[in-house]
Image 1 (tube, one colour):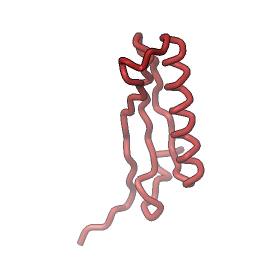
Image 2: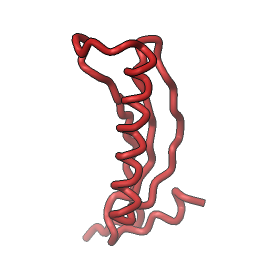
Image 3: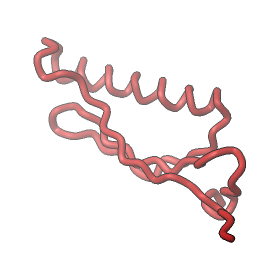
Image 4: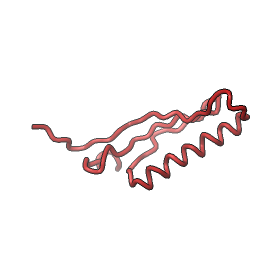
Length: 82
């Protein structure tokens, strides 16, 4: 029998707007940052443990974020978040 001892998810997320949205590069960047902040607030509201591994803004204004987050509330994640 196997049993999960510890688990987490490493995700690479890209926050971007549609190319034909008609916004300036600064407006696109700001919209992407707001969307990312909203994503973080949702994780905090759900009490999901997470860690931002990296965050890079691309030339087109998109935001590439690598996030390590809790798999579920039953698996131990303490070894991933020290």
